[in-house]
Length: 558
Image (cartoon, rainbow, N blue to C red):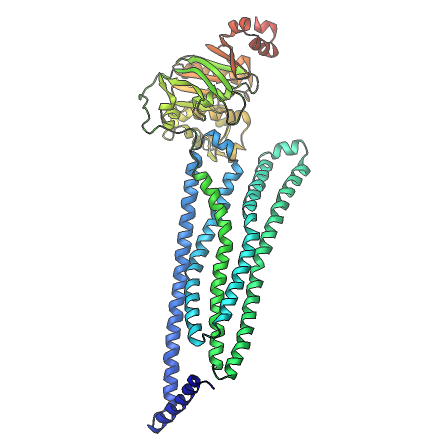
């Protein structure tokens, strides 16, 4: 028997006899000790529980607020994107980054704060207490930790490359889902449900297989940890038994050492779990950061010029060219013309000739790569995007409505528009007839994307939304294509009367829509091959005459 252990045991026996000789009640002393120690343990437990609840509450608060801030910043950044950035990032990818990626970061923050605030305390306290009970068995803990780090490193190396792939495959699945849901009418019209099911199944299977691989690798950590813990306990018992046999350790000390060793290994398990979560969160953080660090290609100057409160609205294109990123040739090349107030400038041409690109440049959805566009002599690049677009009433090629009612969709163009202004805009747009036929009139609900109104009704509501602005410049990008000839003619007559002082730019496919325009620009392969009035272009522009002859009879052309 070792000298320290023998001294402790002999000392305990002598003290017991000494207290008995003094007449002390050892039972009362032991009971008081148990009560006092139990109360202390209970207090420590309550403090630990309160600390755990506090950490959980704070971690959840911090995680939720961080996620809210990231989503807000992401949405704000995406709103500042020009069309060039939208061409770079798909809608499905932006949705995934705003939802799934932010959620991964939020979970990492919550779990990290909870575990990283607990694991170091557990580990440090366990090491101190374990060494206090036995220094000779500390090598077992060190060996277990080394093996644990090795297992974590292997799992880390196998799983990390797959995390980025999981997020990319989630993007792909969202893309396929979005295309299938938004294009359901076309899919059914061509009876391609099976084909779309196959596309979705392939995307889902690829994501499932990758996720399953990552999950299997991740979940192999816990059995490995349990094996290490149990083997460590066995080795401690084996080595401790020899120490007890030599009277160098008591059974209670060995049991306590086992418990502290488990605390140490558990703390390392928590840290290991964090290191497993960290790579996926880092991948998500990188994807979020990638969007947040994008510098929009179209941005305002530090000190933009200010347009007067009342502008004339004269638009001048001066040798304007534009080329899309990575394109081999210009989408529009060396375009020059002037759109004057009180006049209608029409743009016509074959599909892909650059018509919509021209107006996108005026709205600064893109910036011209060469040349200059001015409004009342002021280059639009010198004007803030907000002030520029506040002076333009725009009706896009694809009519988009928002969930709400008829009135709220028209007021989208001017939030403080009165009921009279809303009704007047609807009347000019020839929308008042079908609105009045609805049970609730202007309060009639509009479904998501305007699913409960026809294509022609969408276009008329989009036109009303632009007209309610009473802007000095109006752009109609093929905005009459879904209207019948009678409604088209009535709408154009109403426009001539109501916005006669504004600059009107119309993109159209139908000759009948633009033949009375003050100026017609004929586009072909990105170039203006003819500028003039209808009758002049019939004589001087071959491309225009071909379009006219394909739509109108010889009597109408004459």
